[in-house]
Image: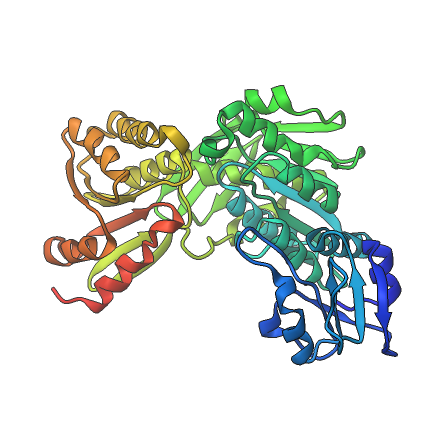
Length: 445
C-alpha cells in the first residue's frame, strides 16, 4: 500500500518536521528486518520493546524516513514525521485505507470459535465477493493494521477478527474498523483470569458495537449476557442451535437443517455447526443465494492445528491444539469421543484462567466424565493443571495417565499405543503439542 505525504498527514495528524526528498509515494514498514528502499519506518512500542531505538538502523538499511515521538531523529533521514503515539498512527493509516476502498466490513469476536467463524464466513462470502480476511489469529491492533494494509484495492468484503485481553481493546479496534456488520460468536470463560467475571467478558465482547455503523447489523449467538450488555440500537439478529436439526454426524462430515434449509460441512462437531450459523445469517443479509451459501459452507476447511489430521507410524493424530479454554475443551473433546471408537485423548493445560484455574480444569474433567462415562476412552494429561482434569476423569473409572512434558508423552505413545489408534490433541497453544507429533515421528517403537 502506497501513501503520499499528504495521505500520511491527513490520516495520522502527524507533523512533517523534515522532508528533503522529492517523491510522490511511500510504503510503511514496522520491521527493520524487512525494510526496503523508500519505505517509511513506523516504530511500534510495547511493554518489552521500543522500535524507536532502531530508527537509525532503518535509515541505514535504505528507509526513506521514519516516525518519531520525540525531538531526536536520524540525521540521514529524508522524511521525518512526529506523532504522539505510533500505534495510533498505524491504526489511523489502516482506517484511512479501509474508508478509501470502503469494502463491506465485518468484525468478529467471541471467547472461542471466532477464528473458525471468520474462516467459514470467508469461504461463504468468497462465493460472490473478492474477500480479504485477518491472517490466522492475528487479531490484535497490529494484526488489524497488517490485514487492512495488505488488502488488495479491488477487495469487496473485509473480515476483521478481534481478540482481546482486557476491556477497551475491542472498542479501540471497533473505532478504527468502523464495521458495517458485527458478529459475537459467544461469551465464555477464556481470559476470565484477566477480566474477573463472565459479565465483564460479555461487556468487553459487546464493545464490538461501539463504532458499528448505525445502519449496520449485529449478528450474535442468542446468549443472555450478550442481550443484557449490548447497547447497539440498530438491527440485531440472534441465532441459536435450537433452530438446528442434525441429520448426519460423522468424522469429517456434518449435515444439518437450519431454518428449513439443508447444509453440509466437511468437519465434525456441533460447535462448528453453531459457528456456521453466523455466516449463514450474514450471507442472507447480504443477499447471497442459498446455493452460494451452501457451497461456501461445504468448501470450508479448518486452518492449521484446528482438527488437523496426520498419520504417523500407523497412528492417526487429530491436532486441535490451536487454542483451548473450558468451553472449547468440552465441545471438541466431547465430539471426538462421540465419533471415534476406542480413542485416546491427550489434554494439556488451558491458559489465562486466573485464580480459578484449578477449578476450571477440574470442571472440564467432571463435565466429560458425566457426559461420556459409558465410552471406552483413554486419557493422557500433560502439564501441572491438566493433571486436575485427569483426577476428575479417574473418579468416573477412565484410564488416565499423566505427564509433565511433551517428550515423555510422545515416548509413552510410541511404547504403549497400538497401530490404528486415533489420538486427539487439545491444549492451549503455549503447550506446543505439535512437539508430541514431531517426537513420535523422530522416535522408534
